[in-house]
Image: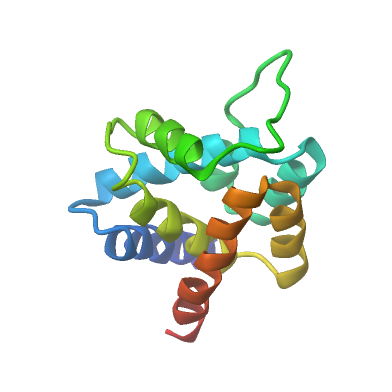
Amino acid sequence: MENRNQELDNYYLHVRNAGILLSSTQALQWSNGTLKTLGLSVDRRTKRALAKELPEELAKQLTSVFWLLHFRDPNQSAAEFRLKVARRSGNTDPEFAQYPILAVFSGIKSLIDFDLSGRVSRSLSPEIRDIWIRAEIVADDVRTK
């Protein structure tokens, strides 16, 4: 339990620092917005598998958005994804959103194994997949610290 809390604290600290955010509250908001949007961008099985591997708080953020009739956009653009994340995070600047999104993705990737990361990647649209893959570099830095 204490190990999981430390893991969560390290995750939020990473999101704050790598995401160029000023406070832990902002890190929580951006994590919540990014994970909710990610949850709508991956298929249902992948979302469930990812939620099982994350700490409970992050799993709730990922799975908390539910639409009765939701059809994933397999060609969703990165710009559209950034805009949705920014709005869910209480921000209006989709250009700035790229920093916290990369921070959240890399933080998540540091908590899951390589196979699940690949599964998430395959479930995303091509442009969002590129963001997920770019976050790999940051995730490797997190693992080594």
